[in-house]
Image 1 (cartoon, rainbow, N blue to C red):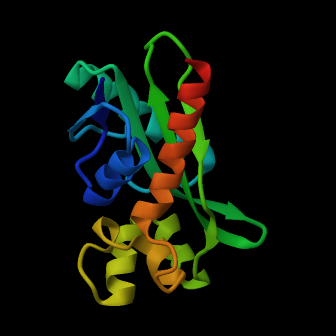
Image 2 (cartoon, one colour):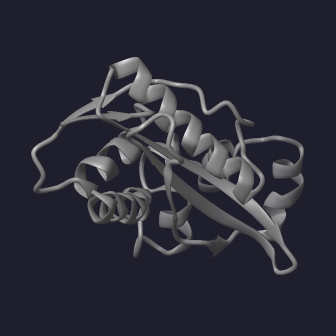
Image 3 (cartoon, rainbow, N blue to C red):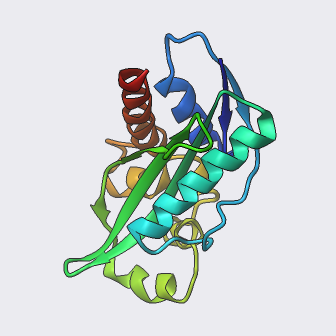
Length: 169
């Protein structure tokens, strides 16, 4: 089975590979647009980005399954939370399989920059004085002191997708 992955980000590619561990599949990462803001600011926008990545990667790679993973931010009465969603597309005409993952509170100091459209990854690089946090531990890794990293967070989402797919088929 051919699995298209709607990104070349190493944390997300590793997450998909781990999520399908033990199954006879081949992986085909590709760079596709999320079709949403560079920094999604709601569950709805983050979900749509994941769906768009799943559909476009499946088409681009002529795969059996397309996987899209998208990170975003959601504003609540309690502050800004990191959110993450995944989509699995196997029949283009059917609704995608969806799954969401961990949520953690982000620093209040991030709110203004995020509202102005800056990406969380860029803000995290400045905050940590590191490069490419989004391709390594991610914000989740920084703010959980390494207990959960970005790959693990998206592996959980991928396993939720694979489990639902397995149940339906």
